[in-house]
Length: 453
Ligand SMILES: *Cc1c(COP(=O)(O)O)cnc(C)c1O
Image (cartoon, rainbow, N blue to C red):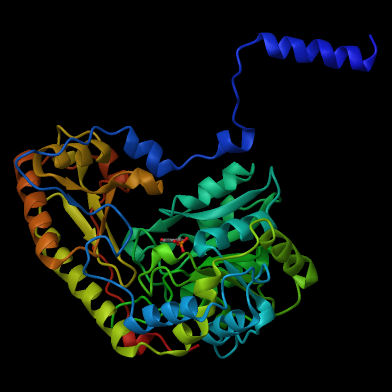
């Protein structure tokens, strides 16, 4: 049959069939593990108790945290100027990129505007980095527990995830031996997240150096998700990964989202650190090309960026980190007293992971059931650890007002008391990280121990 006739025959066969439009393979590979898990839970609250949702990582939802007023004024000014309604260059306006370069430059890690690509939030920065560095069939090393988006972004483009373990008993530091075992010839990059969601941990410079040394030995570029940069409790110190190396190429991802409490503004960035020229022009060009797929980020916020980032917002930052620390201390104190729970004190970000000694709760098979029953009986909603690939734990957000945090902890205490039937420890439970009681190692005196890089 001539080609035209074949085309006509297949067109008429299509016309005869019912019209269904299939989703693409990429779309079908795109899965949000949190949604998939949470949508599968039975989450009916107790009608007699108002719901306290300590599940959502958006600091603005309770109304007690908001942006610094100067940042809001800067956006208003940007809009009113009428100068930011058009397209910007895809990687962002030079002034805005320069403002980010000044904001993130540290001794040993100075960057210029051309090292910065503005993105639509840190998620978009991560997407571009993963897409720029990883081919389908390759793999990406990510932390476990870790932010679920890494998996979503990688797997949607056919990149496999290999998880390396973080150790709760060591302040959630990475198990370097396990990390190294995950790497192979198909490993394209090492992703680290510091400070961490969901752990709230802030890694010591020495641990960052150990990771860098491993990355150098394995010849892996690093994607550093540093969206919680500087969001650390008083006395703790955030050290940017790039400031600790003169050898390892790093794409650092950040943004306004968390520190400035403005997730909805969708302003993030990639900062290219290339001390030995390993990325060369190739990766710069790749990131610039990828930024053209969406024609860049929101220009109103770009117009405001220089004013936002030049201001030190000293009181604002001090207030937020002190408040978050107070919230963490309150929750840690209350949960530590509950038999069967093992909260891990964070040093930053806005979350706390809490281990469940499940063998103490015979009617509760796993942390998913714990989450469901807690909601049904006490109307308190926590995210199950499986959302972060870490069963046996739950994550709670610390941004709720203290009255609600206290009330939630009291309800959790009542719930645990009702369900607890301590069992003698068994060998198999002790072998499992979930059941293993541990003493959190005291942090090396926070301020003294962590020198400036
Ligand atoms: C919130 C969050 C992001 C995403 O931030 P956006 O700027 O809102 O896209 C990225 N990484 C981690 C670890 C986060 O918690």
